[in-house]
Length: 639
Image (cartoon, rainbow, N blue to C red; front, side, top):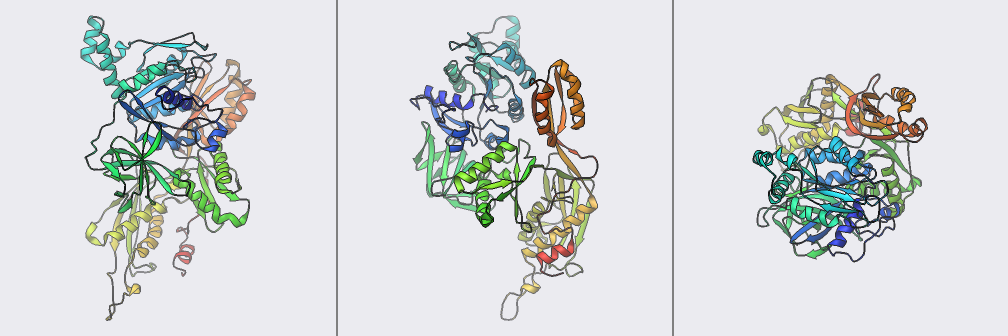
């Protein structure tokens, strides 16, 4: 993992070369690397999709996932976090700790993923190790332990010399080691074992220096990966448990799922359970060995598998027994949205199908379709992602498209509690169902939780499931059109008509409740409850760090005020604070002129905050259950 252009993909090439997997090192600039396999990646020189390679270090097999560094493709990084045994965070020895580096490290620390830091580009002019180590301690972690020194910095002869140290940092987490450290020097073998144990527990973070281009320090890094990152656990004869973290399409359009297996094994022709009551038959299997995916009859625990035949599988699906922490979201969702329009109106259907296939590979694109206006909305992390989607539609699907201006995505949070109920056979309820719902605020970041305030035996489970699914679907658009988050929805009332038949045993739908009744009534009841609870519209805020010349402070502060930025701390040449996400782009555009091109801006999503003034409205793309007449005209075709 790394900030874009830190040299992560070049380091992957060097590790493959050192392991004997490839005979020649590819170049990112030439588009000849193993992991940047997409034509678009080769043209742009950046990683867009995560890629898997495998190699051996001694008796240890390493499955390496090379992830994108550009913040627009953070969703690719998120999907692999739940399948890792450890991580290598690459930092440029020239640029130092950058915005994405901090975002990634915060997440790795929060998830307690064992992490090694590799300071790259020590052969480049401007490389500095002492300054980068200070940045690491200040901005990433105070528990970083340099495992050697770099010499001849900024020259092709730059090298890394490994030595064990960090006894003082290790002693902070080990009382016996602290006693030995105070009494006398700690033997190297004691340091090595303590370092391995504390790295595996994510208590400390070893730091290596080197160059992916010259190979300096890469052998030492390889040894560090083998010695310090914990090996995979899980028995192949245990019940199957795995997670799908990537989906791609083969040459014939067939779906291919990438899955990390934690326990158990998968064989060709196995029937795999996934999601609720879903199952698929595996038609082919491949495992990653010696750099590439090799066809196999079986893939076992600890390996990464490519699976064919699972047509309904989705990213994030768990196969077999659930694995811990596989369905959590670690980064902020996209905060931007745009409308994509085909240049040729006759290609609307083809565009919809193409975007659905892209959303299959990146669910956070989050397609929203407005049938009334015949428009498709996409969620985005940034303008580069929009450019990549445009190029992909042109290259892979032959579709020319244009995008409307990008807008910011807000969310809605309930202001208080509200409830509503509609009873079966009582006006104005036209559905054969009783549904009562209560909406309550929930802690920030908790999402949406559906609860039952009644007995599960009060009616068939399928009707409860219809209500729960419809609640989640309906809350994608709240009172102001934004997704509703951080709330608990409790079902308080239920009722139905059992299946009715005539004497000749034919089913009488007009006198029997169906799932459609509950799906039709739930949005009306839920939005009535939400209207009584009220909602607050919240916009995304970014945390920013601004480095500027001292004499630029005068013109920069008024700009920050005009953009509604709130500085929290201010030091010599550095301003930190929060700014609305919608204003970040304008700050980036105006900063060079105010700082003679010397201003450096880092920003990343921090939180959602209630907007001041009238709440912004978002156009609805559903049947609008806030307008009963309009809704029933669409759903029931009658009032």
